[in-house]
Image (cartoon, rainbow, N blue to C red; front, side, top):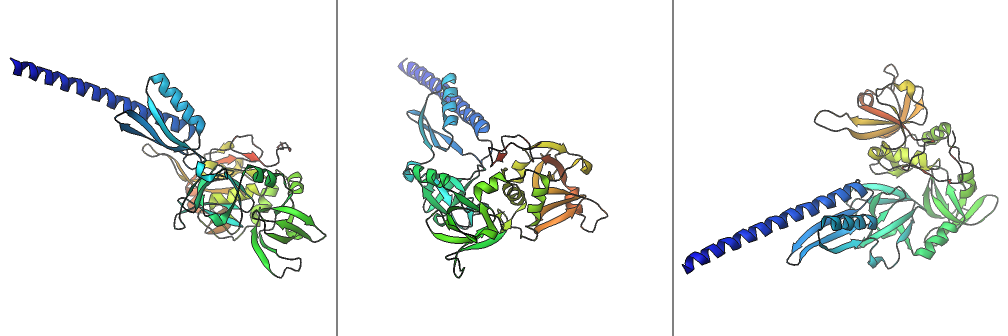
Length: 397
């Protein structure tokens, strides 16, 4: 009789344990699902937002670990879990990290900093940032820093590419008078006689203005180095802002100054550009910050065409190319160029070049015409994905 009672008790215990285990597993699945919902809402693109969380299951319950630069997303997650009655322990690291000791800003300190997909020189070149660009610093790993550029791109930079600054130092940098380099490529020199080079300079570089005379600007780099730049190759930044022309002719004029610049995967400077780095650079040199990649740029602006009716296009429109959607595959944008009129577009493909959509033209681009997807208009369009550098100047009609 005792054996029968013990056997029944053991079975009941097993049933209870299995039931509890099942509830526990279901609760964990629900927790993972809720995290995914928040991630898709706040950080759908890992190139521009960091939200890497996972669930640890221990004897004291669930613990959320990982890191993010989106504290609002974490708050939303916990509110959601509270509504669902799911209890967790929070071990999430909110970036910027404490190891930075307040140095959570930086300014690009060389002509074009190479930003990598991982913290090592052998990693893929994800993008570039030009001299004088202000970036947010999120964390440090070894000698490398994870930063976020003005177009929200996340990438790693080595210490030679940036000058770290605290809150007061970055305020001083922002407030200082500056010049912008407007030539395609050049140098800063250690004297007006231009005998010794201080650094190379690319178009769009920003430097602190110390003084000027009839021929030169005396400038300062983010790390305090000083030099001289010819006035023929640069202009006071505020003057440049006031004289911006938000029109297609200006975009086209800028685009042609880069003719023949080599293709460089990840490049966004006049040393080398990939296709979207080229369109981004053209727009930046005309006072507009647009998304980094072609697959991001395609979501900005106003739809113009998707059936290859090129008569609808205006100068400055962006044409997107890639794989068309099918019943089993989604659309994939892999290339972008800018319409310059006369059935032609300019783009970076092996080098910056002009191609035609006219099959009778000598520069007809059958390959890209065959994979054409759509055209978007970014110029003078109101869109949260587009930033106007001259915020005091209304966009023209």
